[in-house]
Every structure is written in structure tokens, then in C-alpha cells.
Length: 491
Image (spheres, rainbow, N blue to C red):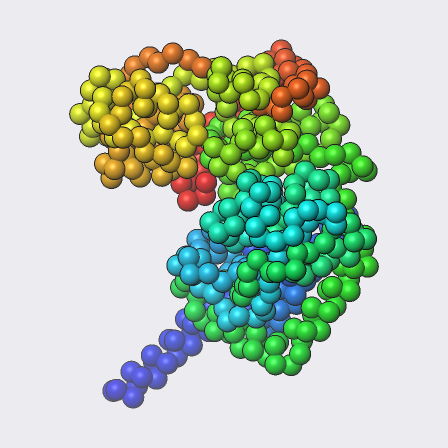
């Protein structure tokens, strides 16, 4: 009977499990990557249907062949590669990803497949010669990369300017909107060659890095299979051949101008977590301010570039001229008007106070001396300290952190603008509630460099047109509705 049972068990396993293995072979390997990380992953040629190419692409295609699975590339902003892999929405993450301990807490890294140095690139006639003089400079790097964190935590230059793509970083350096840029050495060598030596690489590397592919923590089988291919890819000399091939390919093309026929891009800096003005809808930056910024860029007949920065850096970047416009629901105040030029108001801001669902506090007076949270760099911080007379003000980078603070009772209340406060209360019904009290309103505007009356005039024209056509209120309804449908892990 035992033998018969074993036979039936074997046949059952074959029936159940073999088809699923066959299905896996037909299922594509979904790869999340950016196409602006040459020579690791970049668009080949021009046109709307350009394929991706690069060292990482060659390596991953070999992994696909080894597993007998087709490969599907999903182009996303750099900072979302890790989110997609960690959530299981992509099988592999690539594009010259630096291996760090912090990242390894979220995802599973492959073995090291390449190493490089991160370097600083400056204009050929620059007076910046080393890390010491770099500290007094405005330095650009790609948003979400270890370059940004290294600049902020170690180098600490006067200003750190994150751009969405490497091409945007290159363009900002070539247009002299920044004093220096930090990037991978091979990217730097390509930039120097393609610019006909208009820029140069500083002699001393900023730091050394190791690159790996990333996988979901639960997908050790895929990581193990990839490691076997990586070992073969390196031992056979294919890595060196791939590197040489893609550097030759890139050097055959002139530096892609980000200025669209010589027109300087319209650079807009935003904070990315302030719905419905600016927020991430899965892998895309959206919101009222994004559509308005695009309309202003069209009015100016200039291509648009977006920089994602902490809210506290928006106005300093505009004031310094590193960005043309600042957005993300910026309250117009007399103090801010001393350092930047504002558009006409396009929306009114009414403050609201959020507390936990079981909170005993229900008046402004009852919150005096309590722990109050607010988004860093906003006028809500001042309100928490001055009007609510907080015992301690907690500074948050985004509202999701504040919600966790309320639920865990780290803070007693959170001050936010009405639009976002209503969305937070709606998405966290029962856990968070909004107090029923009226607080004087402020007005929102877009910020420009002092004296930039041309850009202000274009923005005012767009605001007037959107108001007359009722498009502006429609935008708020549209993005409120989109935000309410998003899962908190997709923001």
C-alpha cells in the first residue's frame, strides 16, 4: 500500500506541478530599470519605439536565455526600481545599482557583477579642483541614487540638486546651471568625450562602488540562477566585451542635447508627496502643479525638467537660480516674498488639524504644550509652534510618516493644508480624524527667481486661462479622485 500510495503521490505531483513549471517558462522576467544609466541601461538610437541596451541588458538577456523566459523591460524613475522589486511587481531591478546595506534590507542583491568609481565632473574652466572646493558648490546628481545620499551626508556641498534623469544632470552641467555633477566614472567619461572636452573629471574619485542586480527577498531561486550567469559572464570575458561595445556605441553619438534645439529647459523643483498638487501615481509624478507647470512651459515654448527635492529646498533652489520655478502648494507669505517672486494666487489654503481616531483633544487650547507634527519647511511648522504653542514640533518629510506618528501616538496632532488633510482623513477613516475648527486661510502661488517677470507673466496668463475655462477646479477634482484610489504602498 505504501508503494501504491507513493506512486499516486508522484503522479499527482507531476500533474499539478509540471504545468506550473511550463507556465513559468512562458512568463516574462519583468525588469524595472531606468534608460538613462549608460552604459548599463540606455535607449538605443532615437524615436518613440527605441529599444533599451547596455551592460545590464546584455547580462539580463543571458539570464532570460538560461531560464528559457522572455524578458520584459519596464522603464520607471530610478527611485521606484526598489519599490517595484520589493513589492513583487518586477522580478529584477537593474541600471547600475550600487550595493548598500540600507538597500539590502529591502531587496536581495546578486553577486557583484561590476565595480566603478563615482566622480565629480566640472566645466573645463572651473576653479573647483577637489572635494574641499566642491563643498562650496552647487552639485547635481540623479534623484534616488547613492550619489545624492553621499553628497548630502558626506560631501555636504552648498546645494544638492537632484534631477530625474542622468540626461537632465548632464544638461544642467553643460548649461552652467550647476557648478558640478556627480556620477559613475564611465558616464563621466562619456560626457567629457561627447562634449568635446567642455568639461573635465576631478582627479580624485569621490567614492568606490559595487554594482548588483536586485530581486525580491523571497526570490532566492531567481537570484541564485542569476549569480551563475554573472559568474560565467565575468569569467568568459563577456563583461569586458559588453562594456567596450556599449562605450563605443555611446561615443558614436553626440551628446544628446536636453535643450531642444538650443532652447534652455524650464526647470521646476517640487516636493513629491503633497496631494493633490504633486504626488506619485504608481511610477509617475502627477498632480495639479505638474499639469500647470507643463502648461507654463508650453506658454514659454521651453521643454520642461522636473527636480524632486525636500520641500525645505524648493525656495532656496529657486532663489539661487538653480531652478526656474518652485511648486508643491507653496503658501505666499511676506517673509517668502522677500526672497522669491510669486505668481498670482491660484488656490486658497485652509489649515486643518488631524488627530488619532481615539484622541481626547478637540480644541486648539487643548493642544497647547502637546507634541505637534508638520511637514518640514512649511508654514505649518510655524503655526504649530506659534499658534498651537506646541511643547515640541515634530518635522516630517511626507504625510505618510505623519499618519504613522498619529496612529502610534508619537505625536498628538498633525497640521496640514485642508486638501491633503481631507484626503488623509478619508484614506485612514477610524484611525485618523480631522478636528472641526476654522483657521485663517493662506494663498498658494508659484515661486520664481527675483526679477524673473517674464516667467511670472507666463504663469499668471496660464492661471487666468485655467480659471476662466473652469479647468483649474477640474484639475483639483481629477487628482483628488486619483489619490483616493491609490494604495499607500503605491504613493
